[in-house]
Each structure stands twice: as C-alpha cells, then as structure tokens.
Amino acid sequence: MVLYGNKPEGCWIAESMPIRVDAAYIRSFSAFFVFEEEMKTIKKNKKKKARKQEMRCPFCGGRVVFRSAEGIYQDNRKNVMLYICSHYPECDSYVRADPVTGKPIGTMADRTLRELRKEAHRCFDAIYKKGYMTKAEAYMWLSQKLSLPLSETHIGLFGNYYCEVVIRESNQFMENRIPTRRATG
Ligand SMILES: [Zn+2]
Image (cartoon, rainbow, N blue to C red; front, side):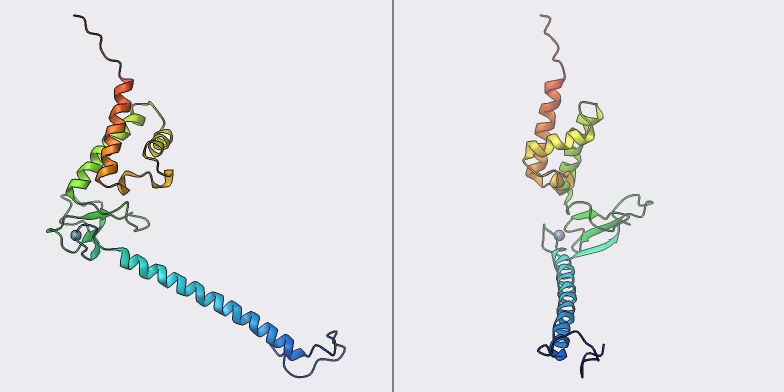
C-alpha cells in the first residue's frame, strides 16, 4: 500500500492532516492485527503445552503414553487406543480414547476405580433401562443428587467417592420403587 509521499490531487484530507499520520494510523492498525494473531498463536501453544503437561498418571505421577490396547485388552479386535501409564503393569491405570476424536473418554482409572465405575453404571443405568425415567431425566436427577453441573455428571470422570454416592443413591431410588411384599405371617 503506497501511503507515503504527497497527497494525490483533490484529496479530501485537510491540510492540517498530513497523510503520513494516516499511514502511521493504518500501520498501528495492522500492527494490532499482527499482535492479535500472535497472541492467538501463543494462547494456542500454551493450551497445547498445558494439555501435554496435564497427561500425567493421577496414581503414580508417571508419564502417560498413547497406544493400542493390544496386550491389555484380551480382545482388541476393535483396535481400541488407550492413554496408559508408562509404568504399566506396575501401575494399572489407563483410559480409553474416543475412536473419532482421539480424546480420552473420562479420566484415567486403576483396576479398583474401573470396577467401581462399572458398578456405578450398572446401578444408575437400571433407572432408565427399567423405564423409571428417560436417560436424559436420569442424568438430570443424578446431577441434582450430586450437586454437579450436567456437563460434569459423567461416571467416567468420577473418583471413588462420587462412584459410591451414585451406587447408594441409585439403589435407594430403585428400592423406593420396588413394592415390598407384604408379610403373610
Ligand atoms: Zn501410573
């Protein structure tokens, strides 16, 4: 863009506004956009770095590696990928990766937590599988019971404590709905 030098003939800009001021103004504008772009890149890189740093095993602090479930799953015909602790099998902690996005489905869990999450799912899923609520209603109910936002109400994110609450609350819900047989003496 040629903005330096003399104003063209018949230019509307007043004599008191030399054209180089406008050029500087435009330059500062483009500098601002360059700055904004750079900031975006810096923020993006920071996020990337943070994600990388975040991938540490919550059980032993070891590095987390992304690899096939081959040798961990007895049957891995579905080619499941895992985020797994680099200290496996000493530290038995991993989480499945979403086959489409490659992102972890929930948080890493060791055998004990995996079993607990499975049990929590079994108890909770019964509520909508047996038709007492729709699936959406059941998750709303659970989020209220746990005082968690709906977006965070996922058993795959829960630790031992929350899993135990899910099991207790779900069982209680079911018990209140199953008619108790009257004692006949
Ligand atoms: Zn570990």
